Amino acid sequence: MEHPLRYLLYAAIGLAAGAASMALGAFLASGNNGWVNAVMYSAVGVVGAPLAAIAWATRRYRRRMICAGVALLGGLLATMGILLELTAEFPHLVHATSQEPFAVAGWFVIWIVWIAAALARLILFEPPRTRHRLSSRRGDGGA
Image 1 (cartoon, rainbow, N blue to C red):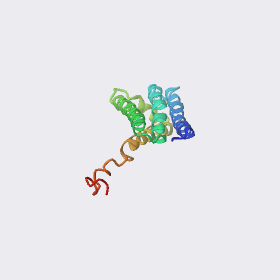
Image 2: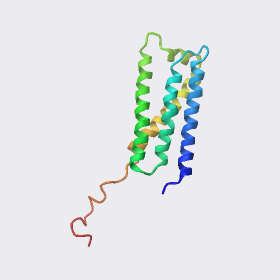
Image 3: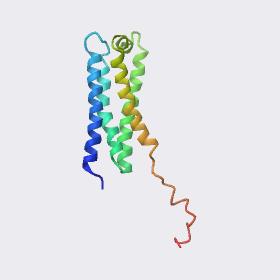
């Protein structure tokens, strides 16, 4: 049985990462920093980071795959939007980087970490499913 405090701890870690992303996004969208869409992408992180963290909290295969998959899908779609922004005539992200390079770097570190956590949960920690099929005792009734 899974302990509810485990979910609470991991969800709190994910919410802290999402809140930090939103705070940096609001800072980058304000004043003369110039990247207005940072708030929109940070909103994806507010949902995606806790989902990626909860995927690490659960031991149930289906729940883990759904949480990590939804987080990863949202992160990849938003990343495609960020890359599309870079092809604009005047990329606001480049202007924000020239104004506040450490804030942009911090925002991207948080962004990459929660997406990588969701991806790692999907790929690296797959339960062994072939153990019973590879047994040499197959077909002899377990004797």
